[in-house]
Amino acid sequence: MKLIYESYYRNLGQNIAFYRKRRGWTQLNLCELAEISRNHLSHIENADCAVSLDVIFAIADALGVEPYKLFQNKE
Image (tube, rainbow, N blue to C red):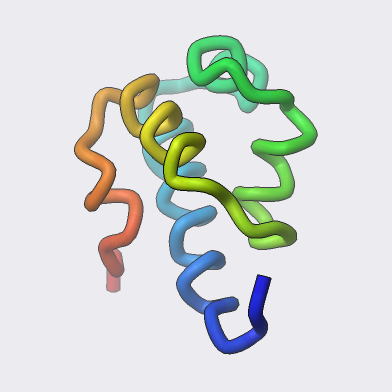
């Protein structure tokens, strides 16, 4: 992950956590539906790794939101 994009990854992670918590889900609940590991989701939510579009699409599908919503600023 390039440091110049860190704010984008942080925003993505915060939005994933927001939508996950809004559903009342744990990380494990989302991981099972998106078919990713809890460790990977933790790294994504904490902006500690880069993430592929395939994983973003799987997370968005599991959360029932359009992928673009995971990138929107909530300010």
